[in-house]
Image 1 (cartoon, rainbow, N blue to C red):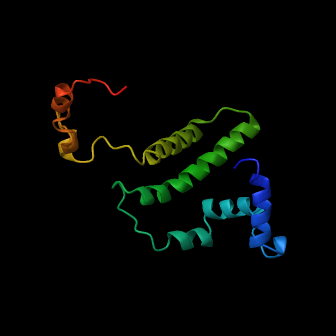
Image 2 (cartoon, helix red, strand yellow):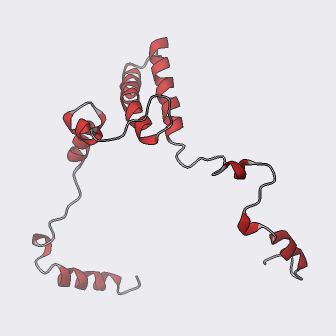
Length: 150
């Protein structure tokens, strides 16, 4: 912002909010409120049910990001509790606990692949496919005197 940045900032605040924080009651939420909201959304509660009530749930086995996310949440929360207990008790997981943690990690790995597409259409997946906008590019570049954009 330059050398006048702090001065300009102060003048703007005085012009927009002449009474200071009285007319600017916006504060970021404190950690206690953030933790409480997080707890309400990640554990079975009426608030969480309210958010998931009108959502479309795809049949089991069909790929649908929102449905998969809602189904994965209880599994991941349980696995997180198990992992926390294991760290607190400083012990290795039993086979059942290890299976639950592995299932949660597998669900997480599937859910984070939101923009991973092998091809947008079947034609793009075919060998030798060239996007229409790029067709003829090699011929045009080979006819130019310049071979590089440097």
